Image (tube, rainbow, N blue to C red; front, side, top):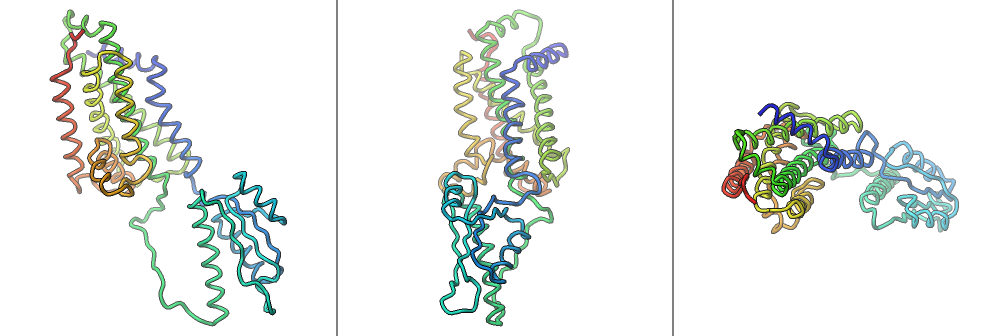
Length: 360
């Protein structure tokens, strides 16, 4: 069995297509999301800043915007040029301060112009929020008034977690799902199509040893997957992992075992490699978007949320994020472990019932 285990590892390394789906595909997502959302960078983009006023208010506003670091300032003098840059997607928004803004003279304008791209809602909210808050404080100072009501903001943890930290845990689940479901299903279907499984039944090798070696080699691959994703995320893009790293690996391997049982189930009902590939994609692609890899599933419509929260990937991601993002033990909410356990038992039962090495 040890020789079969080593042979499986060698075949996985030599199979370029399988290796891509197992390693390169999730790493590619990690790097892309890391460039957009990772690191300590908080800027939402570049703002074309057109200042036509020489008032102290206009000057102080520009200095405050520069110091805040929420967005980069690109000074422009022509509104038409700035609008052309906005249409081409080279800037996030335009701030135009009209002449005489901030001066105490009759007819002086009291509003600045904020021109934005409606497709960039996140940047718009950040930029407009900063401008509104600054001008509100100026109004209080001029009127010598103080705010009566305000908002006290605090985070649920003492760590500066960001969106990339959330997605990084999702990418771990994505990697485990893709490599196990597609890897197992396609490999077993190919073995069946090439009559390899049938030949194994004529050898002294016990069937359970063949399956165990396959499962164990895939779990080793899972260890490398999770390690590479975390190394790139943490050391390449400054992701925050605040929980127990060993516990994180343990539940990642539980996820690998979960999706391997699904892979064997797919292999048991697909007779050809093409059929296994099609069924695997039909399972993994919808789950990738509906189970919460890239966004919280509680933002979905309530009727859809009630369904997708029981998908195999959903409870696994909840447990991984509890460990990595919140430093909370998955045992604090045993329902997630129960759902994963039920999926493993059901898929394992179907696999034992349908999967046969001797199938034609």
